[in-house]
Length: 197
Image (cartoon, rainbow, N blue to C red; front, side, top):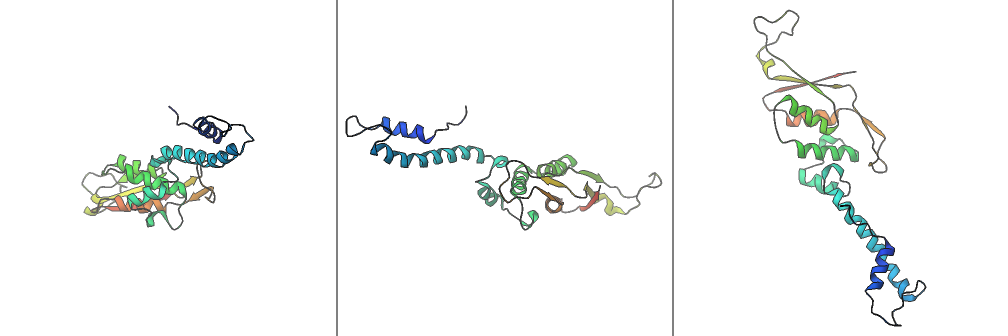
């Protein structure tokens, strides 16, 4: 069921319907009483519209007016988003924090990156061992704890219709990805980043 969307004229009719009957309470469009009531109804229409937006803002993926409250709840903004993050980057970071339930698997880390707007793959390494093919990287036991995030050199995040005024049409870079991945990486692991075209 869609949210009710009442106009100022709807509220004017409702107010006039609740007035007492009689010559002192005229309902004509040019009456003084109608003019007085008409000054109140735009406020009611605005409140109705904002109440309908509240339904949209209640969900973090579509929030705009309640974005500061969502960020305060999650301890955001933080340095991961940079000095002047776009509204979409801020929303993506809120969604990423809420959907990041914890985990140490490759699908978990790729899902977190995807929620932030980055398409990545992950490479795992193993230490050198007998029977490895020639040409494989040769490393010590630390390679058992190393993993690599593979991403494009410049991830481009494009502005969608829901962006606010003053937001750039596109942003380039992987700073948010690096910061968030370093934040959620298991403490005993060595995280590397590889960027390619």
